[in-house]
Length: 351
Image: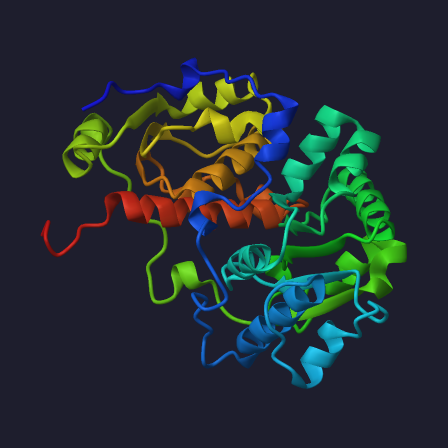
């Protein structure tokens, strides 16, 4: 077994070239396709979304059109007239939007980029706005996962970036999550999205995807944490060949303030399983938002988590879960719960 890694001792340095080279789907979505997406038979909008995205890929010059109304909508003429500049996947948590967005990226011809909203804002910060536009304008497709509507400054920045890319002929595809408070009332995030991207709104086609969070279908809430004195031993026995990280939660949170979020992907490089001691409810907003980014990168890499302390459905305060950043916090709870379930699930062979 390799030595245990302590993330609180890491501070990776990442070049601009590495940031640009990293604009591709994470390992979790590295080999997905439209064929591997399994639509819920009770949610016809999911099958319709697959057809729409196949045809959008065809409009970029890749894949085969499915024909019919959607084929005409997204295929357009060979001259390119009438083709949408962008497509927006509108739906709640866990309906497979990232899977579909990554499938589009795989199906489309390159050069192309895939990243989260945060990764693009970090790229702009590292390169400057103009250089980021110059780099991305050479791409045929730019995919933006988890477009965030809760930070006015970043939203305006990304709206401007998207407008300049669209003017350069770049196709754009984006997703974002419905606020949990809006679920069930027939109002998804599309209205907010189109308002925020302003002059680009009429160039985006909205694809609504209904459904429930697949991570929680028929499953309980967050699993009970393991005992603190047995967490490491449990992880070592369950994953004997894995490279483990082990950190105290408070120490890890404090260290995250010293590592720029653009480097969190490299921060967890080489980690197979994560052991966290003494998880507690986060009460400071800035600390919580940094952890949100780390949770996304852990989920991207499908890193199982073995944790002691409070369960992950108690990770944020009630005020946070109903505040301005509730979308991010709900997503993080969903993803950390899934990783904790994976880390502690007892299989038939182990029972």
